[in-house]
Length: 208
Length: 208
DNA sequence: ATGGTATGTGACAGGGTTGTCATGTTGTTA
DNA sequence: TAACAACATGACAACCCTGTCACATACCAT
View 1 (cartoon, each protein chain N blue to C red):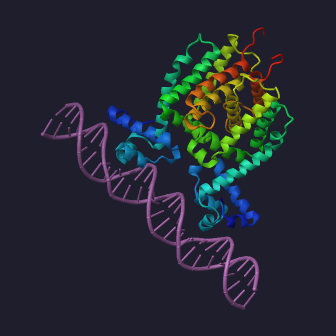
View 2 (view 1 turned 90 degrees about the vertical axis):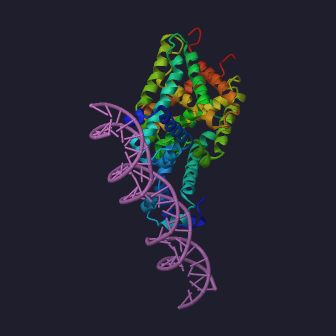
View 3 (view 1 turned 60 degrees about the vertical axis):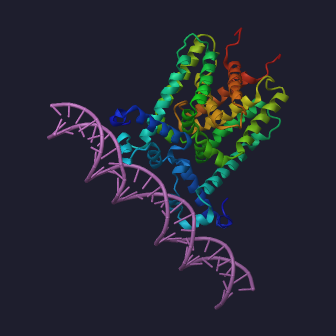
């Protein structure tokens, strides 16, 4: 938590500091951001920084909280519309997410570094292999269509994207968390359930 | 690329270095791994390290390549079985991914830090909010079921997980890549397509 | 055994980082 | 205007890190 000193600051100065922090965190992974560069850009002294924040993590937390609030406000309309139909809500949520990213690219970028890893770094290490992975899933789907197992009206790019993302996500959450599934066995079951959903979503129905 | 000097090393020493590198990279984000700690653990001198690798990134790249190879070998059986049915292949791929993570947790962990971000860091910053997010999607689905819009045989946890992951993924790829979709508009279209797949996957069919 | 090549070593320079603190400066209140 | 509180400052200690290089050792072939 920032100190009261920080909150007492003139709005303009406060905003300048936050803006520059956002700029830093949106282009550079947390571990690579330096307080030195930040205070130089924000034109505050080293001592002041430590009068405002406990350390860099304190500032980062504050920034991510601001982002969370901004996004929540953005989604409000979709969250609390009790009447809306399920899939309309889901669509609203997703497209609001996209619009949010479009309108606040820096906010979105910070969120993505946090939740999906540093894309620059990913690119540097992994390079073009992602394209190959995409190609693999696209091929898989195409041959599924040719064999008449996958509905022909499914957008292959989208489905490939979906399968790729879930492929990454499942083992991530298997390794890291009890948030979603409690027991290791549940992950295997979740895979089965997921395939079930996919199957119903894209499989050719008998009689089509 | 490691130097020939490194490849000429006795197998045991080579393996020791790689093992310790894997251990470091699986617990610590790349930006936080230090050559100093690494060489102390591996009991090689600073000079030797630089005789083997250009720098830390060189070693990291090598390690990730090894992991990639290991996983590829693991998936081989599922990749090249031309006869297998589409959804069996997909299921095979996912469950092999889980088994791989189970058998090589360190490999999987390195991959996840690269593709999904550092989970420890995520937890430190985001804390319990992920649980709330999960709860939101679970509620959404449950009320969808109650209103008769979502099939009652869908596993809510799995579907919530799926929706949550895709929510994160869409804006990530909107921001970072031309790998999956070329034009910004296509992302919105992809959202529509995705909802279409989800809808067919989990919506109550008329007549059920 | 001798010369040459391959490998090992750690001190060192040069740079960067964080957090603190004694000392100023500004503002406010009595 | 005097005195006290709030805020600003940047030098500094302590630390860590990378990449290099001159020198030492091991190995191998003639």
